[in-house]
Length: 244
Image (cartoon, rainbow, N blue to C red; front, side):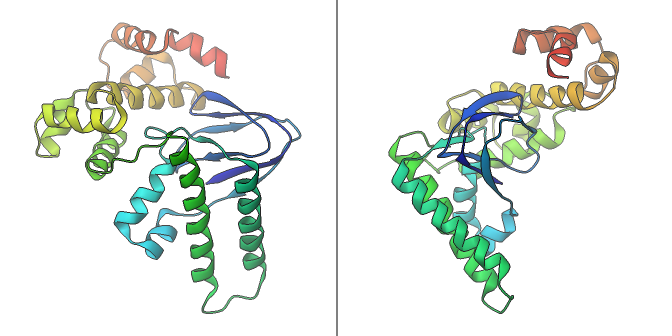
């Protein structure tokens, strides 16, 4: 989803991190990300679509590159564009809106996909200009596979070896892939994802701390407490109270 601010200012929380916004700010949000609106009186446009809607138009490899714009582990979800680019974006959004309201024909989906591809390309161009974007795609597919495995199995293991074996590579190679992509170690990425998933359980469920520890794969709640506090500087209870 793209969240485009067209007037006003305020804050938006994405995966429990708060970002300020004003006219010209764009947030790119991938499926599954937890985000929270704050009542600010600002105006904006929400544009939601599936991965396949883009990939069918430009192919899988090119589509994955475009969709990395929505991966908050690779790129910041907050994008600021200059006034002239934002005017172009508003025109494209208006064209998309018009296309949504006309009678559907054989060309409707193709036109919408093309407009969306242009929109993403313009946003991506701005990020590249500011050098705030990851442009080396050598290891992108392997990185995304690793990320997907962690998000599916985060409660089973927190070791790089566990995932490296599934990818048929060594832990050292896996570490090099992650460092080349986001300048972090493989273990740091695992911890980032595990902590985000634990935060979701703390804020979005009524499970006890002990139950959450068990869900997260910890046999001892004390170890769970230490792990969470080491990575967030807050105890699980403190985090829950702060965000609920």
